[in-house]
Image 1 (tube, rainbow, N blue to C red):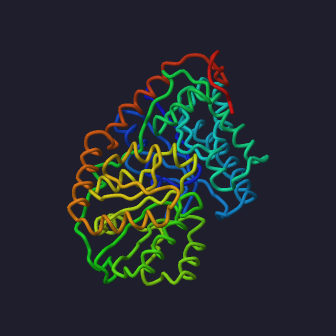
Image 2: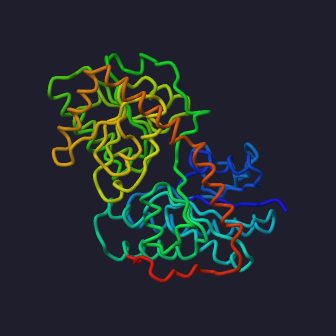
Image 3: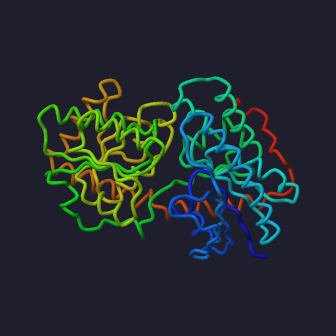
Length: 411
């Protein structure tokens, strides 16, 4: 019987969510029948689409809002539609595995009833939600405790965990109580078949000799406020030869544009919003230096950012803060700014790289070699397939995986 999979992702539409799309197409190419359930989004309004062999179902979502109440409203709306659509897909197509992609950590609620029918649950751990909440709000109140509870229950429901890095694998073992044999590191590396350098476009430098590029979500924990301070510091120091382009959308985009205007940075900083893939490649290929200003915090310290490996795939030298998983990914492809004197040191590192073209080239080549030899998506496919083999080999209909004796704490 053909193996059938339902992948549920809550925070982004597919195929815009690059990790989920790589997973879905790789599973299909390896003989699985794959359905993806995700929200509708700008440019992805079709309720159903068959794309590259993958069945994509998209459910309605309310407009994105800032704040905890907006988050809760989105949470319940998404959960409602996920339950409705997943049962419809099960009755229409069937599946033996549900793969739940966080955030948030609520998809286990959709999966639990199906476990009565022998369906296995794979937790695809994209973000560590309790730490993500702390990075946004800095409080350990009832909402934080809810995040901890949801994570705990997600781990208990999961038959197998796919972690994006070794830090997340360690959390699944110590905090989640999973046996190491049930946890697989599936990194979110770039697909080198599609993520390729293209010819630089000098016009994208806006008349300046140098371009600094950023790609990512526009939100609190991404540190774009720090990058604006860096741009202002460089400009105030007398360097008017550098332009900054920030690619991406998100709930913080309008606020960041306003802050940039208030700081008088409109002539040297632009925000593109979400752009077509080809335009993204053109901007990053034109950039002389790429940056990751993710602010130092526990969540960013243990998280792997796909932007880092995308920069490396395009042979771009990087400036970022000295965070554990960021250094693990980039190694010598990056310079690491000091966490204390963060704005000045980050700015100095950018300027130093711009003034040393031979170092830019050397670090860019180091990054590309690391991606080609270790971090590209092709190296993650075998781990993902092993995770699925492990899930299919598991027997029984346990609703919640019991926590092994001697495992780590839940908190």
